[in-house]
Amino acid sequence: MQVDKSKCIGCQFCARACPYGVRYLNEAERVVEKCTLCEQKTAQGELPECVRQCGGRARFFGDLEQGIETFVGPPDGDGNFRPITDTSKPWTASDVHHLPNAGNNPSFVYILRNRDWKGGDE
Image (cartoon, rainbow, N blue to C red; front, side):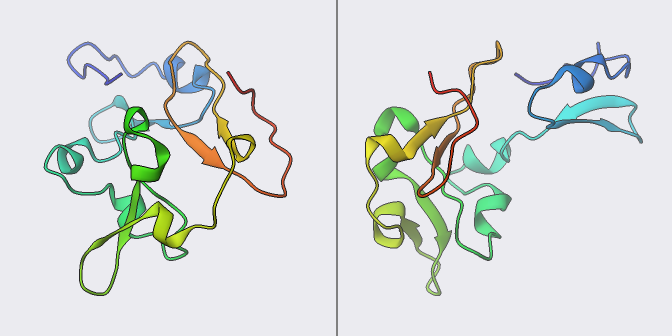
């Protein structure tokens, strides 16, 4: 969900209520904004900057409806996107966790191994 800047009054109630802490006040415009995963770039087939710039190569991006194995990560030295299957150790269904739905239907998935998941799987 995007913020309609023409209607936002900058009260920040939505920012305080956001369970994920991704909303913030744009001081210059006095409106609340949030991460859009660089939708202007992904619409053109590019990766969000957080994925492109991840020095640990730990972030991947893709369409969950097509399956996690289709996700790609930061480009290699030749500028080619790297499939998650080429760079990550194999995972099982029990390693895949979803953010809890707080009314916003999140579509993020985390692959965790040897850790206790504190979120709520759906």
